[in-house]
Length: 199
Image 1 (cartoon, rainbow, N blue to C red):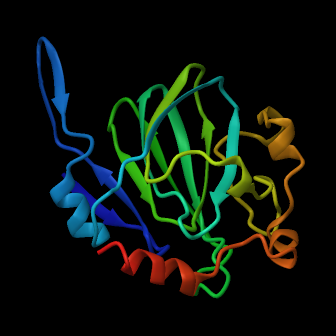
Image 2: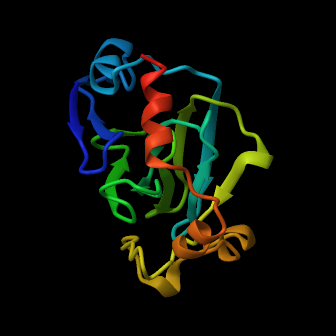
């Protein structure tokens, strides 16, 4: 298992070793020891989600209030997605920056994003299926969105803009600047302090 830190603090990509033979293959898509070594704490598991999307579907950018936030460990088990992490933490040295990793059923990589980071993905193929582990359960009152096509963030979703499909909720989401002005965004210092309490 290879773990690569992303340029946004609190996020990394995991590339598992795959063992294959004529019958198929086996891999460990999550393993506590390497995860704890990279994150500095265990992953508390409160919920597991599965999402199936048509090509062009964009889901996100989603985030939750910190504390407790919602850390996510995401992999793609069928098809392919461009998985995106956005630093929405006010006061972060990389505030407003995004990074992406292709998750697919070939390399079978996973991406981890800690509490306070924004998350979204774009399905690159029909039937793209992701599964993700969450540190906290879904709580609508503390869940928020930033518009995935906010030009100030400038995410390149991997498909032409005219092919992208957004939910009504994501389409109505505020820009990053509007979310900051309304006080919706988490503080970098609060996120770091919360994660330190998990160690």
